[in-house]
Length: 315
Image (tube, rainbow, N blue to C red; front, side, top):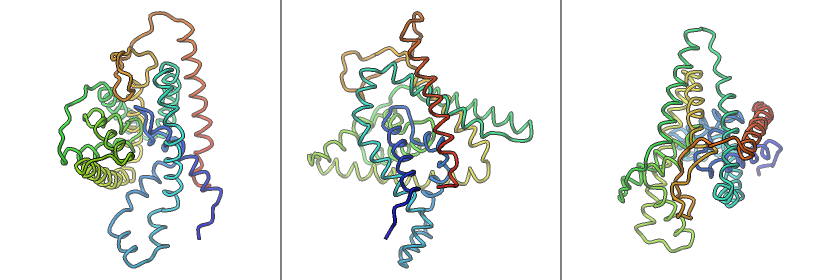
């Protein structure tokens, strides 16, 4: 029997924060995991879904399999993620729809401070290596900036496309600074997938929709396991360059969190179907001041959060 300990509650809280981030368009739970100091452990645990784990399960070595898979960590983190999504989904939806400017100002401050924390980890001793990491961060930032400004491509209603969308979107979800839901929208599959999930929850889905969802989930599983193995391999061999790239992704994604945006679809009521374009405020008014204050407060909150969650060795 598993005995509940303090470290389990800590992981649930961390998962709650990750779940809250995952439901925000343009924000990744991977960003929160990185700030809280559990990103590498998370990637490593997911990458342990392999032949060795299967052999341990087949031989009914449950304890060894749980330790190898870091089951307790993933279970408590998963509970927190699901709780965060369930508790914050409606709130985030209303805030982004009715208080978008101020909400985005908070997110902007959160991600900006998070990117500073990540880039602070990039401290190569050699000067050439350091400038190389900065160059990688700059290219990653430019790529992310370009990515979040792309137009949506057409959706192809076939099973192979559902599998591909799942594999790509789940990879983005564990990358700091890149939102899996946003990538799914870029691929043209966001409305289709969320619509199927909604029908399934209401027990109104067709056989075709159920098969499409299972294929999409299979793509997510394959993409998550395969990409986590690649990330683990890269982090073990080129830790600082990879951290620089992840920090660059976060900086580039700030384009999506810019508080001042023009609504390109004023007649559309559904948040998932609305489109916005960044703009500069015409003058400095109380809204600009409020956004600045909110962003600064959010940055300070992240720094405190990083101090709380940074000592992963204790938990």
